[in-house]
Length: 445
Image (cartoon, rainbow, N blue to C red; front, side, top):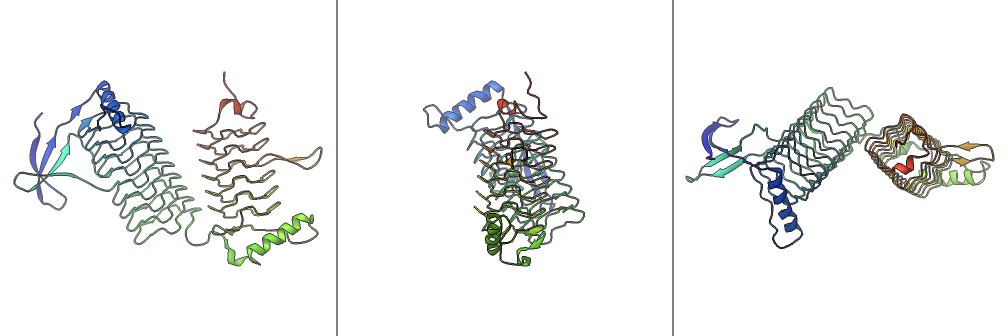
């Protein structure tokens, strides 16, 4: 097939030579052979060869779970292709067409996606750390020294992410400056240090997104939903935010009473509370942290916080590892990204709390036995535990009614007699045998 060359005007009105480059249609069998040789190349085996698939048409083909790291897919057509779980690290996807492609759980670390179209693609849970998604156009130097633009036989738009799904994707340090991401789903996405300069995020969903240190200078987020998003340290110079829903969002401003408003230094209050617990209330003072914003505190690991009263407290990202918080009241608390590994949380009240991405591995959320007839069970009803790590946790008789456990890790957790009535379990990592004695969940077959 012969390439066609014609003159076209760019956005500034200047005329440039544009080459309509032909595509090479590959069958699944041909693709499998190329991928096999690439995997041999990646494993330094004799007969291997790097996959050079520039300008190939791979529409609808299956590349799920395959190793394509460092492959060249420049200008490749991958519409509706299945790339779920694929390794695309350091891959060149410059000006590629990935519309409606399945990239769920794929690894795209340092991938070159400049000028690529991801319209309608599903990148749920994908790893895009340090990926480059800025504008880009293919160009080659003609014989007379002038530049000619190169396009493939598709109608892709540069840096187009409209309608894409990037829920819980890791976009830390990624370059999205100038990207078009209207109506795009970034729910719970990790976007620390992401470059979003002049990005078009109108009407996008950024609920719960972690945008710490992100550069959103000149970005357009009008009409976007940013409920519960974290914007601490974000650069918002000239950012258009009219009509954006910022309910529950965390910024550099305190979201509750600041630590400076405490009646005593927190370290001193912790000592008094430990004395109160140790003397059954005869000495010391009970600790009340209701509504305080303590996300910068560093003295809570291994602390004695039994019977802590702290509904609505902000403990985002705080290290509470190995703390004792038995029968504590943290209803509606913000514990997203907090480290609660190894904590004794028996009988705790975490109803309606935010625990997305929190580490609760090996934590004890079972019941607390008061006497022969009385038990206090942990209450996590209505809690948001999306992507939380509950591996190896003790959850006996815990109340998870109406909780959101989507994509949470429950492997090796003890769920005996836990109540999961009405709980959301989409993508939850759990073994069938763990659910045998769970209330509100029917094990089929």
